[in-house]
Amino acid sequence: MSSDTAEKKPSVSADEGSLFSTVRNLWAYMWPANRPDLRLRVMLAVGALLLSKVATTLIPFAYKGIIDSLDGSAPNGALVLGLAVPIVLVIAYVLGNVIDAGLQQLRDVLFASVGQHAVRKLALQTFHHLHRLSLRFHLARRTGGLSRVIERGTKGIETVVRFAMLNIAPTIVEFVITAVIFVWMFGISYLGVLVVMIWGYLYFTIKASNWRISIRRDMNNSDTDANGKAIDSLLNYETVKYFANEKMEAERYDQSMAGYERSAIRIWTSLGFLNFGQAVIFYTGFLIIAIMSILGVMDGTLTLGDFVLLNTFLMQIYRPLNFIGFVYRELRQGLTDIEEMFKLLDQAPEVQDKSDARPLAVTGPVIRFDNVTFHYDPERPILKGVSFEVPAGKTVAIVGPTGAGKSTISRLLYRFYDVSTGSITIDGQDLRDVTQESLRSAIGMVPQDTVLFNDTIGYNIEYGRPGASAEDVRAAAAMAQVGPFIETLPKGYETPVGERGLKLSGGEKQRVAIARTILKAPSILILDEATSALDTKTERDIQSALDVVSRNRTTVVIAHRLSTVVNADEILVLRDGVVAERGHHTALLAHDGLYAQMWNRQREATEAEEKLLQTANDPDGFVKRGLPAAE
Ligand SMILES: Nc1ncnc2c1ncn2[C@@H]1O[C@H](COP(=O)(O)OP(=O)(O)OP(=O)(O)O)[C@@H](O)[C@H]1O
Ligand SMILES: [Mg+2]
Image (cartoon, rainbow, N blue to C red; front, side, top):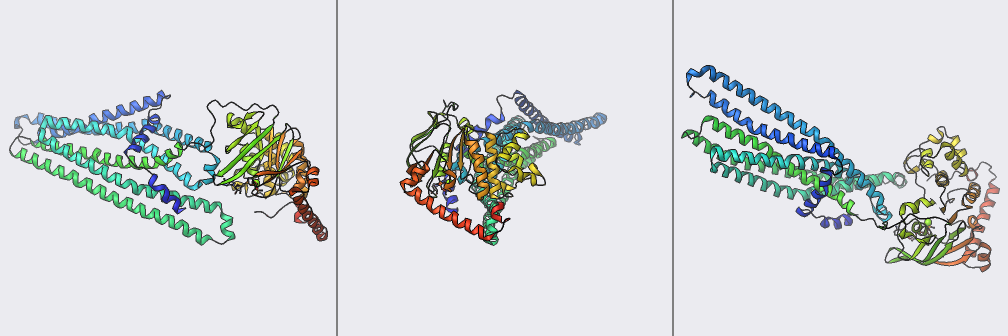
């Protein structure tokens, strides 16, 4: 894993290019096309913001007026007027500040819905996209890390949308207004100092922030890594216990967290450096302007009020300046967080619908594999030219040693992967030409390893056909021989099944999976070791149920236990990626090849098992009750 992260790091590009493209990607969310109400809010928010900037610019003038009117140089005769003016000005000053505060809050309130809209839309888009990404991606992903990427990404979006819209542009407006006032009131030399100071400030901020980005990335990587490890470890709770490896797990987690700790500390240290540097640059500029204005007051070109005005303007500029530093920092940080999410969004699904893909039209359905080759990794071919046909309504069984590629065939039929060469067709339509959705809704699958949603049994069965009536759910459960078991549960169909369904035994889970497929009532059925976790008696019962279910359906049965496939219309023996033998049960036995060998071996084993059962003479033994030891 560590080599994995080490490989990824250099490809993470920082920089202005990706920043630009991220902002461009985000633009659609800040200025949503089909939401005039949100656009109106954006405009109102910006309006509130500009007004508040006007208010802020006027405030120092009120302040200057107060000082000048209180200045001893005013003629004594005008005392009454002299008192009225500063009071009016103070009121103006206070009003200016209150209006400013009000407008700022109004802006935030107006903008909240725009920001949240962006967050929701992008989160949903990411969710959709994750489901579009292919099985290959999902087998390689680390759930914990992935969830962190999304979490950080959506948070980052809010930051970016808010700051980009609400701070950068208005602050620039404020700078311009201040600059004009400086030139107009005090002359070009003051402006010169101001401009140099602001330029130095921004230059330093941008440079330092860019440098901090790499630290932020390290921090994110450690965060993703730590969360991935934590979730993986918790998902494997039982395995950890089997091997009493809690200590090792904790150490692995702690190592990732140590990396996080290191980068988090560096983030804070560098922030301190950044803040301090900003203050030094600002106060240097402040010092120069203050000295210049003191000299001005001395030689009479400036009044005392002018001196205060200058200082107030400078302090007033310090706020947005500081803020723009902060905003830039947050923006970069947010963009770094979003970047990972956008990378995820940019990942093209391996299996995609063609632009002219049509829904699968099922008539038969007849399944045809035509000289199919397939590999997960190019170095290791799994299927090397497999051809067979499942006629409409018939059952074809696929047997063969473990790892022969039986489940792979079912994954290809579901189009989790595309074939390397050759083709798979259903009723003459190549799987690559039809929509994945229509294909998958035509097929029902009872997989080899059933995983259930962490919800109730009822929910999991109903999942086969969301919205199915309670009677239908019950009927499907009865058919899958799981009904009586559910009735014995205190909470019945409302019983929670636990994470991944682990509160049920393997056999119960498998029957729930069968029930939900029965409920789906697909025209094509794939049973991948559908009864492997069941004891012989239940298996026989379910087998008869499955026979009923598959009677008029085109069915592919994958099985280890050959006794379950003797009635199949054709049996394919898959070995080393090719169909080694094919035919009906009796013909294959007569052929005396691989199938006959497997058959004899299994029969011996079954006979031995039955003998054992008879001698054990235990009518309520665990084998008969069908409760295999839980995983
Ligand atoms: N996602 C994958 N990436 C790489 N190799 C894979 C992947 N999935 C399966 N394989 C490999 O492909 C081969 C065939 O796997 P498959 O699951 O089709 O076997 P199977 O015939 O169903 O075996 P079993 O009877 O044990 O279920 C195996 O050797 C397996 O290691
Ligand atoms: Mg398999």
